[in-house]
Amino acid sequence: MNSSEMITEVVLPGVVEPEGLQINRRSMPVPAAGQALVEVEATGISYAEQSMRRDLYPGQPAFPFVPGYDLVGTVRAVGPGGDASLVGTRVAAVTKTGAWTTHAVVPVDDLTPVPPGLDPAAIETVVVNGVTAWQMLDRARLRAGQTILVHGANGGVGTVLVQLARHLGLRVIGTAAPRHHEALRALGVEPLDYRAPDLAARVRELSPDGVDAVFDPVAGPGVRTSYRLLAPGGTLVVYGNASANGAARSIVWVFVKLLARLYTWNALPNGHRVGFYNFWAGSRTRGAAFRRRLRADLGSVLDLLRQGVLVPQIAARYPLTEVSAALVFAEARTRPGKVVLEP
Image 1 (tube, rainbow, N blue to C red):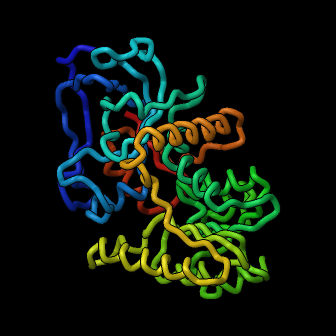
Image 2: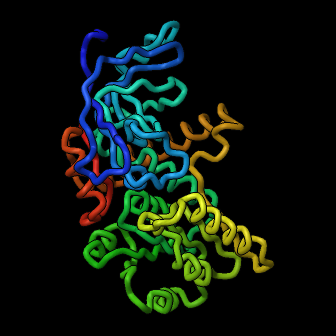
Image 3: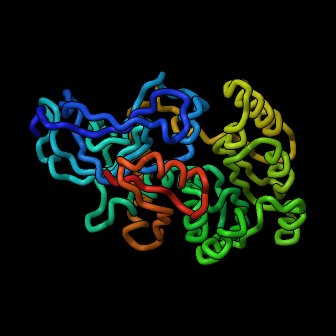
């Protein structure tokens, strides 16, 4: 591609409201050795970006930066010495940041080819969300016929998680606002109102002996309830700390307290397994192995999407330049699924 061309990208300048996001134009980047230039066809809004704009996401870059946790697009160029046959290939990648743009430079080792004929927005719903759900279910080591409780079942991860769980033959109880219950029933979920004061009792009515696993993206005070609802030998997987988004305290201190609590529970001699799911665990110490597993897991999820086992849950589609409105919509959580940006 011509390096004199311009790209459009979204810049997060600091702690701002959604309308404070900036649209920037700059020259087309040129990939270096080991990199590819990807023309982005779909990216998305996740919990991570919602936290980053508040400066509450552990390990986020210093402001200003371009957000965007994952992308789907087509390779337009490769760096010196790269495999020219990649040009024209549609790929997906988890970037952590940098995907809210029309063109992104991505390490070639981070690219996963995607099945032909699929809508890029549909693929986008199962990139980081699909890998997260897939790996958490693998960690929980569940068997067909067991029962799980999924908090935030209407979210981007939740809607993929419940579909994978049903595919594995699991019974799924899911918490969400009542406006999402019909959509969750269509996915095979038994929905409960997350705000119900008797939520724990309602779960016990459905599963008197407790549930075999709980997946909790909220943490906060409710994580104690999640733990108490486990059946003997059950597993609690915490994969977020959404309750901290309104916290005035240091996010590091909030996470330290959460991890200390989980570690203490995990040490108790009751057979429960408790842990915090970290998407990037092992990425620094086992870089090549981490990437191989990521590509394999994403490939498995994409194959299920191709087969129709996974039905993409797209909450809304917005042009990249309307990212501020898209972020407002995403944070309102009025529709289940993932908000997709289409450059």
